[in-house]
Amino acid sequence: MDVYINSTGHYLPGDPISNDEIEDVLGLINGKKSRLKNKILNSNGIVQRHYAINKQQQTQISNSEMAANAGVACIENSYLSPTKIQMLSCATSQGDMVLPGFGSMVQASLNLSEVELHTSHGICSSSMMALKAAFTGIKSECSENALVVASELTSRLFKNKRYEQVEGNEVDFNAEFLRWMLSDGAGALLLENQPRPTGKSLRIDWIKSFSHANVYPVCMSVGTAKNEEHKTWQDYDTYADAEKAGALMLRQDVRLLDNIVSVGVHGFLKLIAQGDVEVNKIDHVLCHFSSKYFKSKIFDMLETAGASIEEEKWYTNLYERGNTGCASIFIMLDEFINTHDLKVGETIFCMVPESGRFNCAYMHLTVAE
Image (cartoon, rainbow, N blue to C red; front, side, top):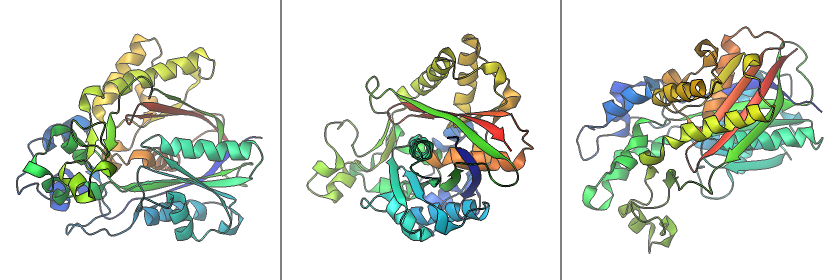
């Protein structure tokens, strides 16, 4: 049973926010301009992004509503009625609520009836895990189609008041780093067990992932304070105490970040060794690298390993759309197929390295008619 991506869609909230406008939206921490902002932005190469909060730091649209908007865009681009959707598979790093699951909230926003429901929780690669669940469901003939949606709303974590609540007003580099990296958005894919009636489809040849959580410590997280890895936000007497300790800050241990390149390339070489990938037969590469800094390192490692792929085959929208976490690969795929005249038989290799605790996901697609 073959599985096809027959429609795509995405949603980005509000107007694009330039680098000069970021602190107008997120606010100045303790009334001071950041000394790190320009350094990090120069490294990641992002020139604009979208936020779901306004300059008064009011949430304009919820995470589940963004996901639903991307889902609607995807359905409207398809030949399938919403009433025919059999499975909804959703991903996010954090929903609007702790419970229930994100998928339940998205289903309600989409008003889909009696679907099989799946929620994938993680960081960047959670979208690929949600996609894998839908893919295997169709592959095993448990369903004929599935709507897969990934959405992120991180800007609420980056409000200046979040940082100012930390006792002693101490804002460490690891807590501020992601403030200049992440933004909001949602993407959606529609999977079916046959190609769309007209136009082109993308056949999913396989989806595979390799997790290295047993080898590396946590790199990106919410839930622990600095130097308190054995005490989580739920172990404090009150949630206010957890916030004062900085346990609700989104952190990136930048000392570990370079490992994401090595484990990502290692997984790619493993796929080559297994016969899943032939480098000379890859026509397009969509890689969710979080920063321009990592792109050059990936290229260098591939060249050293004798597995280089010409730079003109690589596509990214990171610099214009920002890093939208798990939604990035879906937004990227939607914009890619809508801006390229793809030929039947061309192949697309997708790669999503995740720095949470180093899970790397890969997908191989072939253009079908």
